[in-house]
Amino acid sequence: MSLPVSLLCFLALGGVAGVLAGLLGVGGGLVLVAALAWLLPLMGVPQEAAMHAALASSLASIVLTAAASARAHHRRGSVMWPTVAWMVPGLLLGGWLGSGIAVRIDDDVLRWLVAGYCLLAAAQLMLGRPRTGVTHGTSPRGVGMTAAGGGIGALSAVVGIGGGSMTVPLLVALGSAPVRAVGTSSACGIAIGLASAAGYAAHAPDGALPAHAIGYVYVPAALGVAAASVLAAPYGTRLAHRLSGDALKRVFAVFLLLVGASLAFSG
Image 1 (cartoon, rainbow, N blue to C red):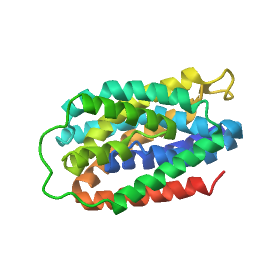
Image 2 (cartoon, rainbow, N blue to C red):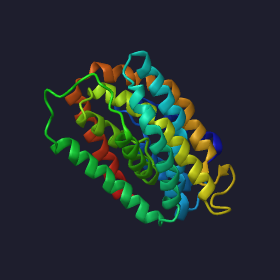
Image 3 (cartoon, rainbow, N blue to C red):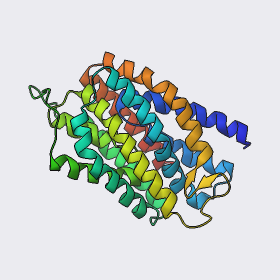
Image 4 (cartoon, rainbow, N blue to C red):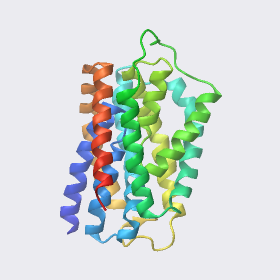
């Protein structure tokens, strides 16, 4: 596949990722990982490194995607910045350590880990009992949020996401309104993307990918996706503010099921 055609594919993926970032509080990471794991071998990336490259490139693109989504949510007052401040140290450390672990895991094992994670998260959203009467305006904070950030950052690095599928349910369970949980998750995704992508670049073996790569980060994919997602994220944000909390949860669950199934039956 030629580079111009590849860039068009990455731009299209970025548009989808941006809408998902604003709508669900994720950088579109899960759908990006599935798509990139299929596309990158067509562009010369060795099959045995495709999953690592998909994870790393997705995380690198999430930095700008999450920033655009967080900015749009901030304008609507739906980012709990005190919560973000408490979680960021853990997110940074967890993202760096998680990427160091991921580069040592076999490509096929990573694929099944991501697929399994998607299906478990979808089941939790679909089967979990709705919480009523607990939504409040206080931002969750404290060392417990920092510790939670460490776990979220590490797992996000392994499965190539901005952490929304963990951060959003956690904040909702602690009493935050779903739309505020989504906005806060978007801001947290910036830290996850930065630390995880840096880890995949630094921990990759020499010559892991062909030209146009830094470690496991395939630069054309990361930049193409990020460029389009930044423009598309505000549209997802507008949609998130129009949907009820229960509707957001249902959309999120279906999204995770589709992505998990696509990974399980690919490769």
